[in-house]
Length: 397
Image 1: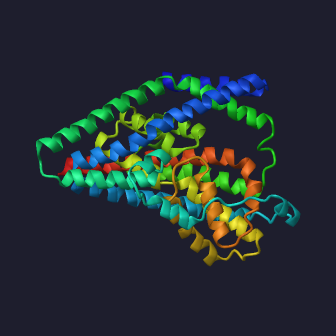
Image 2: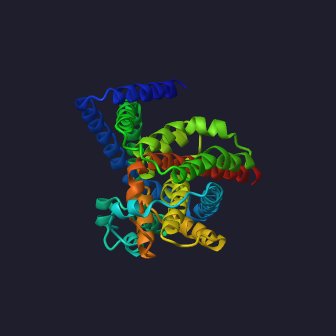
């Protein structure tokens, strides 16, 4: 409770500093925010790799397979529900088309195609994914190494390797704990940065109903749908959210599920009490594939862009894009603006008027913040449910 109050106080202080409009102060806050983001990103890559490898190596593939199955089931259920909520709101609120002269003036060029994104997941050497921070490639490598270690016959060499990896993991968590201890200063910087952006009108030109659909869908998923998943498994959503609030707040400001992962894992284990074997296996996977906010954004934005391009939005179109958005979100990397560029690639691939994404770009900062917080909240819910199921099995067996 004390830590939460300190963080809330840091939010308020940061908001006040941002509103002051002092250029030197804004520059300082931006500098601090960048430092904190880079430090968490630095720890995120080894956290993902070590968590998956050590879980496979020490827990075994049989137990890991069951946990992975439950993780995938709940991930797909929550992601489909997020996309469905977005589709329902899109139909009910019915955003209109933008004036043609506006869409023609907002040019934007896609950086990569969706097929390029898929190919980039497959690593062609061991070092490159680490240098680029390619989360999906790292996850594939970690699965392969962990799977290999779990199938090696017991020997002194295997024991040394596993103990070395576990030792590195413990050291990593010590560094994470120290960084979280100093987090209030980072929250002040993040809050001031956002407050300064709002006060200068960066997000003033919203697109009305489109924004309402996106943010409304996120709010319903966050406060209604995900708590219902927890209640269905006999878990108190208020208790889970209260314990996981540090991770949710961190996600809000970093706009990166991957960068928030160290905080998410530390919070899940120490505050929520999730078993290490579950937290260190489920959360890295969820960070990579459990993208509720991204699925909703891809669906709503794709429908909005296609509608402006003259494509009839029928029930078949909506259903098709629910599946496309879910599959795309699962393959998206948990990095800032990942959903935006993924949607850009999808729209470019079908010849839709991607200039509209240039109009959305100025307000995407706020959307990205809320989406990422929702993604991490969903990760936390999935981990809590899987942990609950695992404990039930242990009690009955």
